[in-house]
Amino acid sequence: MEVQGKIKLIGDTKTFGNNGFRKRELVVTTEEQYPQHLMIEFVQDKTDLLNNYQVGQPVKVGVNLRGREWVNPQGETKYFNSIQGWRIENLQPSQPGGQNVPPPDDHFEPAQDFKDEDYDDLPF
Image (cartoon, rainbow, N blue to C red; front, side, top):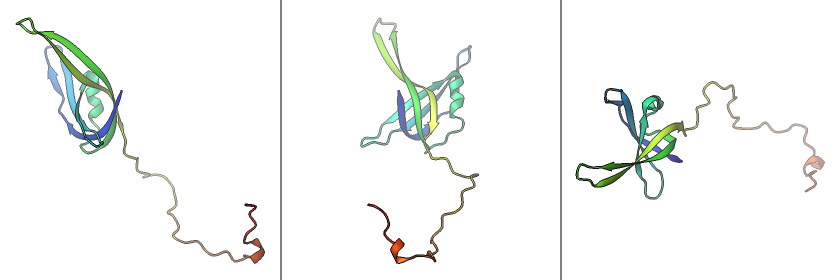
């Protein structure tokens, strides 16, 4: 699945437990009639994918839906869902910085050898 929108928030990487589990949260705001603010979790080595992104940047994020079941001490079963990111892609067009493209001409020079009989020689 994919989510598209603008980055609203990029959280800091947090480490949990003795085994060093890492998690980083990203909030993306969708651009539709009723925008949604979706919190997407990046875990372990995927947390580093967010290092080169900034708030306000349009992105496309590859996500998986995750669901968990938990039984509390009173014996009640609870269910939790999360959106887990595994890929992120910049949607901003890249700047043509280093390309050798000549600037556009604002005008054309008139043809010097134009003849009236050459004016409309197209067959359609």
